Length: 174
Image 1 (cartoon, rainbow, N blue to C red):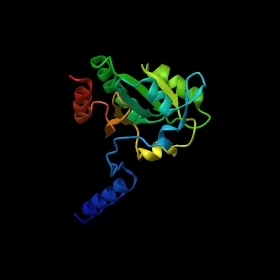
Image 2 (spheres, helix red, strand yellow):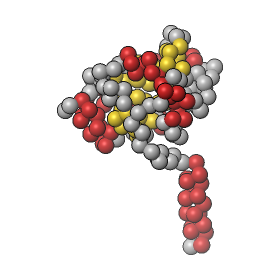
Image 3 (cartoon, rainbow, N blue to C red):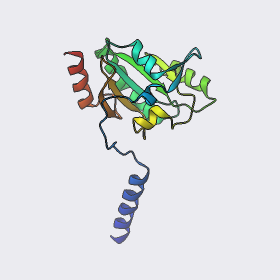
Image 4 (cartoon, rainbow, N blue to C red):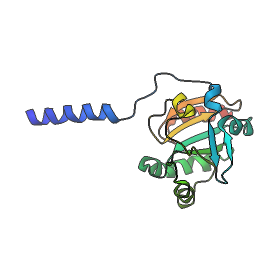
């Protein structure tokens, strides 16, 4: 009995040290620094996240932050694809955290998993102005951006999160 209690305590301690933690704030707007974060498209062009959001102003964006090496990201793709079929008017943005120098791995994963949407790659370390601002500590990470480029839903690690879907429908006017 004592060994079982010790085992449970050890698992609890380690899961809290390395597991995901919900952000303390529920942010609604991006900072200038976050929007000025540079990011690369599939053709190698460098842009900023603010320019991307401006391009899709007037539309609802579902942002998926992922990486080809992330097993949770890969297992979540089927649910994301169901969401894409159900809500075809949404813009699906993918921001990849694949490691620096792994551009081909990132591009191959998009094709391998048949990810429909608009794709960008940070081509930098995990820590950058955008990821720091959104308190990124786990992937996949999903966010909803409304028609005015404000944050409609700040934190989800599941594409089919019922609360996020509820906000999506409300944002779309359904």
